Length: 66
Image (tube, rainbow, N blue to C red; front, side, top):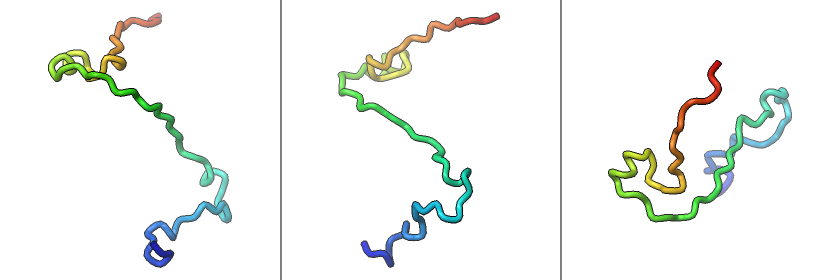
């Protein structure tokens, strides 16, 4: 791809002419790789809210309510 037909050529990383607010990063995510495991069957997964046993974290409710 050459500079002429690059659809992103109008964007650059230069901070010239930008205010501090325009230079701030909106967000950054870190998503660790999940090891493959045998999923639940569709009906159990629907009942539990996930197909993957390692993500099966039951909601116990409660908390500090004043």
